[in-house]
Image (cartoon, rainbow, N blue to C red; front, side, top):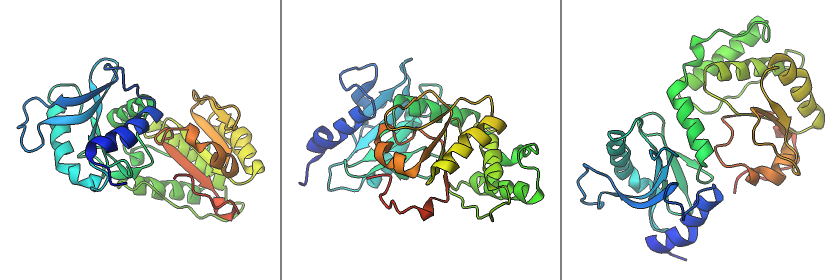
Length: 282
């Protein structure tokens, strides 16, 4: 079906916002067709399609909608103007989403490149991202905790990953031989991301129960004892923890119980060996 913008919003975008926890009937949470003061109304009528609000009334994100047949990226110029104008009226620049109902992009304008996401973020997700934006420091400014990663090559691995993320990349691959302290190196990275305020909620995924148990009891508990932690089970998910572990097989069955930006840092441990080849996003 080739929906126009109105039908796209009604049939696809509105339900997606509801799935992310936004109450469309609560004008303290979400506003429609909100004028952007101080911006020339032409050619986009000077209004955001949706404004998502913090409890204090500030705009945490704008959503620009396009009809289903258009590419959402065409809204870049619009949303850049919108978030820039809104930033002049409140204490921070809001985030932005661009969507045609089928594809959704998230953009922290002027700070990160836009990226396609699986869906809208919840209020909790956006509040967390704002906190990280306002408080994070470069990973390379912090020293490695030698009590966790005491070997020289472990420290170098942490340094190389830190360099990659500080350059703006969002993924890194570490290849380490068995017995070289791979998990301790990962724990050191988690510690570094936490101290740098670049990650507050971490997920460790493996394809075997033994690896998951070791990560929870022999590593997170030992090296990061003050961080609340839990194992993800399909029947009981506690959303208040900081460190999570789970098998790939479990995540395949329950990943939709988490919003797309719930986790700040995700670590996959040798999941390439798994026979479960189902993707973790639709």
